Image (cartoon, rainbow, N blue to C red; front, top):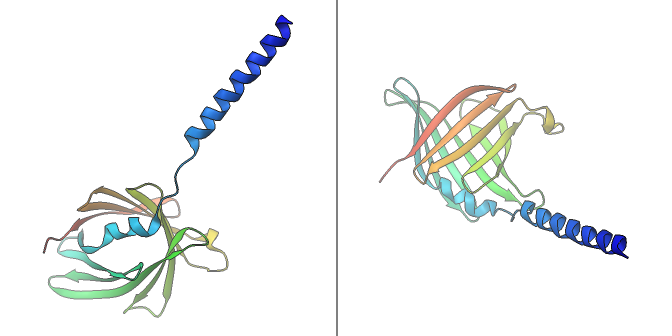
Amino acid sequence: MKKFCLTITTAVFLLICLNGLQAQTTQTKLNQVELLKQFLGTWKSEIAKDTTIIGDYTPFGTAVESNLQIVTNNKILDSWKRFCGYDKINDRLIIAKLMKSSPVIEISEFWFTSKNAGEGFVIQDISHPENTTIKWKIEFKSPDLYIQTVIQNNKTIAVRIFNREKK
């Protein structure tokens, strides 16, 4: 009888512990559309001496439209438009990018991994997105500052600090 009670007690204890551990690992689903709104406004990053990226992000329904320019010495070197919308099926943000200097339409995926950070990748071959070579990570350090890390072939090729422009 003692052996039976000990076995039952051990089993109940293990069930309670395992259930408690399982409850701790369950995360609430992040609201990708709400988190995307962190980008709204005008952002600026110096990418080289006298060269900056300036991006203006505006709401477009539940999506975000952005107009970006690379500017050096008050001269626009290139500009592009991006449209970012939510893909409910995959719980990801999809970005379409059109550049003035290129006929290529770039498609990317992005998702927030926490309230302040996310990651994404450029889909270079739509039929095989796992073969992409360009990835990026973003981390909001404050409501007015985020850091973008660009990775190609598993090597960091750029780290950009974006500051929100005050109007």
